[in-house]
Length: 399
Image (cartoon, rainbow, N blue to C red):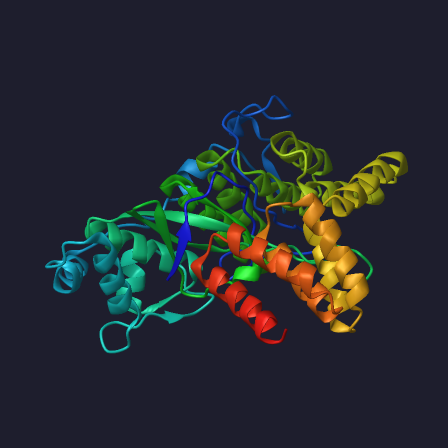
């Protein structure tokens, strides 16, 4: 459980903890901020989606209502209410109530939920089963926290993307946790499989409905991995009915249509994702693949250039280059790449810290101190701030 100062709305992306998987060229997921209004594009409404044509059968959107049920992610029963009352009922202050609830859920002597990347489901299921992945654990904690009178919500995290050594972007994943507001402008993140703070590029609260949409999206990806295209399509459409502004879901839908051989439907899905988010890298990459398959080389080259432009304008691409340079001990190259990344993301405390370390290794203690002090000033996570202070103290002691 990590305290985190409240932030303005920022887009979010993340890794997989069994929540959702992305497949290179088949589908690549990128989490993006939801838009307040939907654009005008190939689809004005999810109900206008073309039916799935698969194995000689035609399945219309109307079939989703009969064949897909929404899970009750946040339902609680009497045993769960008794659990909350036992460990938090006599505690007045919200922060202490949160700490006690977290300890009770986490502690092996009281409850001790275990991490399992395949253990999905709702709060009740997790409570009685004792295993959870990131999304199902978030559901459990939020349900119990609300029962304890706490302001809890789902949160997804933007994770720094990574690339291959040839500059090609690799699998992008999704991470979800719980966020609890205890007042005093502080918010706590609660996670069964925490990300290293250096991998977090941003956070954003999502609604309960969006969380249900993510559940359907996760189920769809598991079905697609098993070759069940129909189930994957049904649950992806339901996810879009619940959260039509989630660009990455449109990319996944396009990938399913392409798998089924419905190229126009796939193309329209990718283009709609780009209407929602013009920087949706996964949609661009899938268009490159689709146009390559169809021999539409001018259009392929257009989107290939867009992919390269996106990469070069992405601070985390330059941070990745810097990390690669660090691995081989090239601190001058690391310094230059961290500096370029910081130009593109001038308030990123982790990049300030990394640039400070590069200057330290190059023997420039003045600039090292400058960037470490800036990193401490801009850090929003308590754990990050302490990490940066340790580095600054070490630098001072070595002077």
